[in-house]
Length: 135
Image (spheres, rainbow, N blue to C red):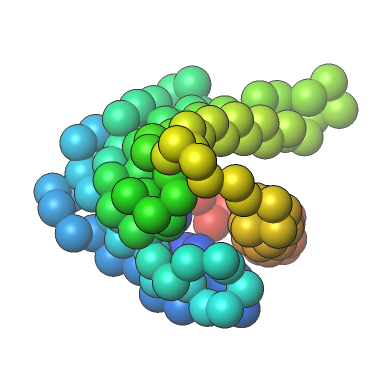
């Protein structure tokens, strides 16, 4: 729910800045993320489709930027945090996209995946170091 605030602080090497564009960080809200050269695109706007704090999951749909209309027709991400037997957590990220006809992407997908993984690693390090930050 606070990713637009936390991501630029934890992963400034990837996320240059972020803010809410429309609404109030709940379902239907639109957030914009501005990226550094670590990502293959300069910004993206996403609409929150699902935001369930009790189930530790959210789903967003790309509405602008991030290659939409240039290489990508549609894109969505579903993030779910699940408890593990040892008391930890497992983050599952399912990103789906449909390319525009005739478009091929190779390095861009790998670059974006690498950058997103770095963001999650930074969030993990922060939460391990600050276990009470979001209780």
